[in-house]
Length: 126
Image 1 (cartoon, rainbow, N blue to C red):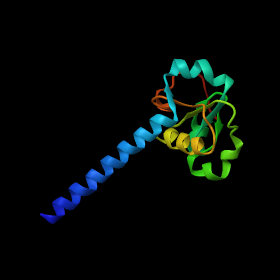
Image 2: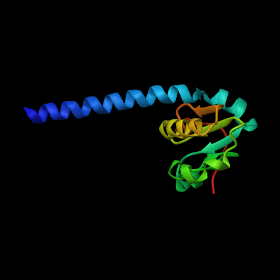
Image 3: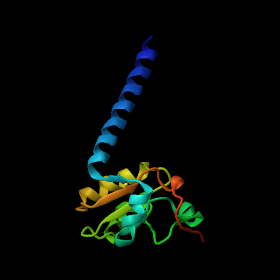
């Protein structure tokens, strides 16, 4: 019986954590549809937060690769005074990257809704 309570408590904690993360992300970044993303990303900094092997397999034309795992070391490559368009494979890492950038002074943060997985525009492969 105690094991059941322990499992229920862990599940509850995970759900609360996920809800808090979603609410924090919603305040930090504006999700854009593909059409909205296409309309503005050429005037902004386009950042792919996936790992290099995923980036090399295919990425949006004009994107720079700054993996989320390297953000602490490389975030200064992103100008806080210009809009930042973020994307990843499915949309989860972009939110974490946006939270990190917002704390560092970036205010114009946008992410591709659905991530690269749903992208149908032009791509580049290596």
